[in-house]
Image (cartoon, rainbow, N blue to C red):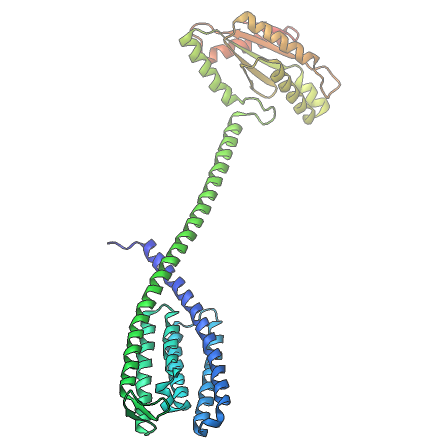
Length: 401
């Protein structure tokens, strides 16, 4: 199977998350270490009278070492990137110091009281890191430490092996008792390694699920941003399309769009025999308004004429700005007589409209209708010629050609 870069990245992220969880578990284990250190102190001082001086001193020394190490681990784990290997010396020191304390409390008691159960506690603590290797190391070290205590005790003749039926307070310890403890301790090690493996699998699944959820959230966020970006792009495209078709000053169709509309209507007229009319109109004496009142006033005149045309024309008429002060109207499904009526209504509306300048504003019109064989240029030329005749005949009038 080919390993993709994404799968490798996922495994690395999972390892980082597992490592983070192990460090959290190490903190909890360290809190237990510090708590038991204070317990060592308390027990040592509570039975000081029963302990030999060297045993008491050994317990205090081991407890101080454990306390110092616990403080060291505490601050080490507070760093931004604590070392991963710290769990191995931690388990080793814990079990070795625990063995010293147990041995110092009294050798014969070590094998016949609940002090032995502390080994189970430290092996169990190692499973919290859900590291099978660490748990196995902890178990083997506990077994080795226990055998070491037995060896020291036998060598120092502080105990001698007897039978399992001997009394609790006897200094003779049953060899069967020792063997049974080793068997149970070994079985517990195997169980703990299995539990650590299960913990790791559970943690891996939980972290993988968490990782997938985070990725899904990130993906949803990215998709939301992408959708928003697409909406913005679509709106910008619409704005650009509008800008490419609309004249900025008048908000009417620009010449490019009007050319397109003329071609579409001519095609429709040619194939379906619909009537088509066209009119050009020009603001009379516009240069005079510009020279007398300024270009801003001239722009206001153009805008006002555009507004009047928009308000007074029919809904299916296409109105555009053809040039500086010149406008064009394409009248679909309109014959010559109707076009003249529309032109007259528009002429009167402009003449009666209020303008910001102190003069009346009028427009001259040139009207034409479709003739079989016409194209855009031929119709425009006839409308322009008619407009020119209106200008020549005194302005503010309509001519047809």
